[in-house]
Length: 125
Length: 283
Image 1 (cartoon, rainbow over the protein chains, first blue to last red):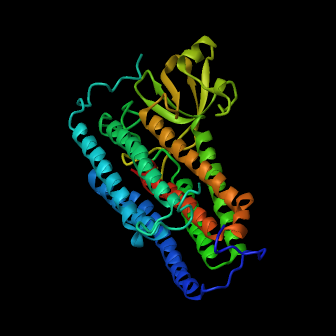
Image 2: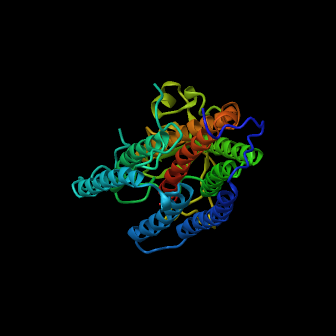
Image 3: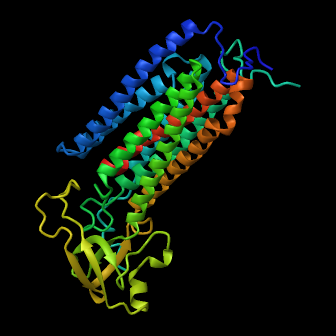
């Protein structure tokens, strides 16, 4: 079925994997660094919650900025998007297009909402 | 007929079938969670200005347990790094390391779900009580000496039910006071004070569940959908770690690919949480 077939019980196959294994060892170091960065990012996000940015917009922007960096680290290194094939990028470009459109419509829609001061007492039957 | 490129990469794209498949699937998942985040944004910006619960439908902040949420985030990040380490271990022909990393990943997944259930459970006995005087109190309630529990919907209370069952009063363990940012005030006098409230004084009462406030509706919807993804991912990864690992002997390349694809899904689940955590816990 496969040229990689191995009858060895533990799945060992020695042929031609040395340089490959060396690359992977390098990757592992990267993974550990990213892991650390993600934990630091999480800690930072929580820390920012206790910082009083005078505006809510600023608070949201800071939180989403840190989240975006963390998301980039996961996507770029854990999901290997740093060095992926072109077709994968095409698929993601399509998702990015529609996602941006969705968020754009959300933003547009948010200007169209009724003003908020009237339904304060909705709990009252 | 044999299906081509099951595990070998197609020369022109450089991808095997499952890799194209998982990325198409993840693209659709981006839109699924994107739509829910969009709903969250619209609910939030349309909420009345003011501070919850004094202003009944103002957007609440800081209601969820931040230390627990932070810990759960760390648990999920750990599982994300262990699943990629599992994949790297296979690349280096270290099957025993692979299995250890996979077991840690699956354990982290169940730890995450366990912690989340604990948080969910708490919300079912946590109530907001609006008094006829216009004041509002939040805290954990006891009715007839019993805490409501989430596995028993008949434990849930509304004003109508209090009235029909002629419950004269409820007791509530009052939450610590919060400032306008939702931060707990450090020198709160009323923290954990036990209060008795007469049913006649109550204007409204509801638990921290979807019917009470759009925040809880969107919180439970998104986190539960995310939780289902964690559960699904954990089951698949557990399958790969044990019964599915037989493939390592017959077709190691296809098995490595499976772990890569399973891992991609798992990282995506982590990625959603990276946004979800600040959005529902902190903002």
